[in-house]
Length: 613
Image (tube, rainbow, N blue to C red; front, side, top):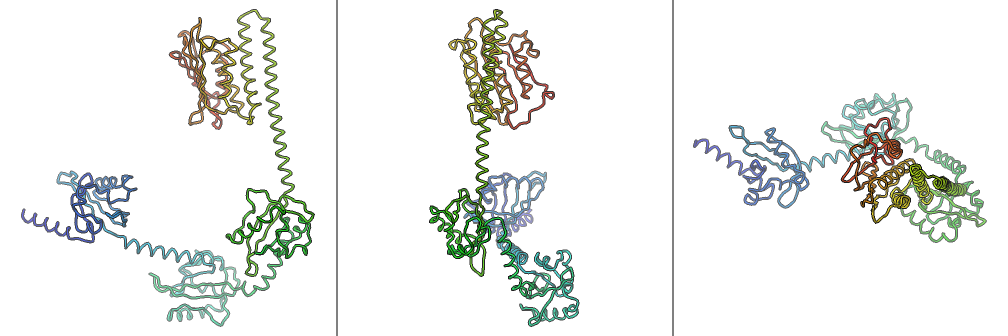
């Protein structure tokens, strides 16, 4: 036993003296129960400060809040060991990159006793690795984005790396060149001498131009030769010495003057015949170039405009602020942009007439001088067409408004005819049926009236409809408001025309039923109408009363009256469902998809129930 105890003491002494690794023990809950010198050096806590505290204090706040420390202990307990690298926090709040190993400790019976945590500070190693990676990435990006063809070649002349421009210049894909001898890119007559030149370079590697004093040529995939300039730079890599070659195709340089002249001629021809007015203006605002269309649009000859201030083409009232805009343009970034975004722009012709324009501005360099190329389009015709469209839309709105007005009037005529007819009817049942028809017609007329008064002819504010319908029915049936109180709690739900009319008819029938049947023999009570739209977009219309309720002998699944049949028919048309609560209180709820939700076909529904009474 003494031997074992001495061994444990030696082990504990070794752990305590280790400085380059934090070694500490945790109980099963994650609280620190031991602390070595390395832990104090790395994490900054003295033993007395940390013993008994939860090890989550070593984690960044966001990791601690997310429960990462606890998940790591669970993993270590399940798998006996957890290993990871990540950010940890010292006592002073500084973060460091750590390598962590958490080992579960168990007794002879396999019961979890706690954990051993070994933490190494790898901040410097990570910084070095990150910097090396960033350096390599910067090198790769610099090579890849270089405007010249770049290739890296090893001592044996094999191509180890190339950039996109090398693919473009030589016409080969990257896969076709990697690993191949660089001599394949040389004309046949130079190939036999090139290996010797390569050996001379590696014997004395230094940055230098290649072929000084001689014309160098390269060979494209299609067999065409082209003149090049090549710069060589020795590179030391993990694979050994390499040479980085920067290859410039100087064909364009040799032909620069002729190409420049041809380019200028092409530019002049393109500018001259584009359909828009084109003007080139210098920093001082002087016009240096115009095209034929500019002469036509503004009415000046070329000689009258060249050298003049661009402000002469701007209306007098706008000239002072235009100078400021021009100054800001030349001070801003060199990028194409529209002029006057969100504002109406105007030009002025030689005869003084103004006209609307659209202007695109493009900064360009001409002979090392900053210029602006302005493309100006006369949009008079477009403005006239836009105005015509606005006029047509107003006429269309007026027509739709008149249609709703006439439909409403026609329905009111039908209502009036039924009213005249009812004066000649003595049979009470027939008279009640005529009155019900009048109320149905009035509810439809009310919807068309509301559309006639609104700015949106496609949708009805159904809450306003309900607030108008209830008083109309109270008047029609002579309901005493002191005996039956009606309340409307309606959210502002917008319904399209094809849903508003059937939903309005359902509301009419349910309210009519309540007025006629819920409160017999002078009984007092309340009727409440609710309208909402749920998160799914379903519209929910509820009519509730605290009247006599639905008698048990009434079969609500097979309505016999016309009103209830209409309710079920209209519910099907809406693609909705009805739910019925018979009493205490009586409540009928219609639910159907609102605008934007697909209405299910009536044949697919099986849960529709008819209304009561």
